[in-house]
Length: 380
Image 1 (tube, helix red, strand yellow):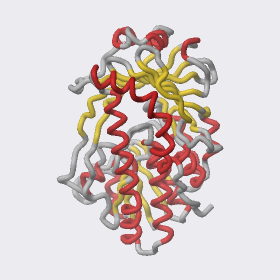
Image 2 (cartoon, one colour):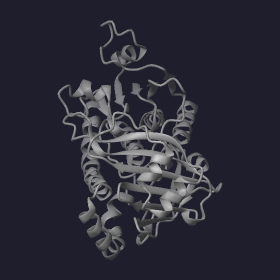
Image 3 (cartoon, one colour):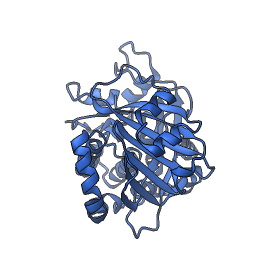
Image 4 (cartoon, one colour):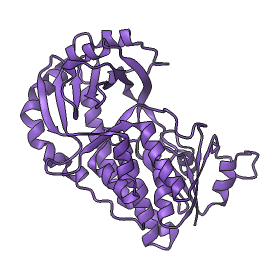
């Protein structure tokens, strides 16, 4: 089977690994020229994503590129602890969530894909014009000849538009984000702990890294999408002036290293057509810290479906059915997560009063379905 993967980020590189493990001939085309590049900020991989990495054969390489995180603490803007739960896992799970830079995750995945014999071609973008129509792009030519085309090209996927020309488009989610690092701050708390503070203007996440720096991410609530995210550290600190720990972190030599607008995407009516298929954010930008983990799950599930069913169209249909409910359920959870970060003053007071009473008690019951997922093995 000749497979072309469009995009070589997390979803694309993982798909290249998984397809090579079932014997496909794989070429991945990446629009950006840097082989990995410092794109994006840090991310967390929950245990469901780690089990997918284990199936792909690169769990240890990814672990080595990041650090484990045990706990997740939730704080009110006034510094009151609202919840303390295991980070990205069930309480009795021996696996621990791993946090690392997105670029390091992509680099580890691409290295394994190349080691297994996949080709990664950078600086080549799929236009969707098709071979022989003047596109002149290697990705278009290769996609036209392939037995399988995997759309791993993110939120603004060209493959998705080819599958569903009248389908939904991304919409601004009412949040934009900035992320970076800061110097050591004693108030940031112990290592191996992820902290989320619900402030007046948005949410502020931070965790101390093993080298003593603090990795942080601010998500600002704004009903109108900014034309450009031009905030500097001082302006950002002003937005969190009422929240003591975020203010201290931003005042400790903080650097902004990544910015992003958060988007939602309504359900995509057509995610495969028997030859082309969508994975990762191209199919379901779920958010809630699960984007990378769900992309890794997709890659394993796609390869397993193709390995189990010789008829490619039937395999893609089975893959789509198998992933739809899980992705949809997580999208609903992500919407609730965004709601907590964009709450108005009254809703925020209710959240701060109710969360200490119910969050820890309901956490296991509401997340077991997510963290207990077992993706299954791939041929080695």
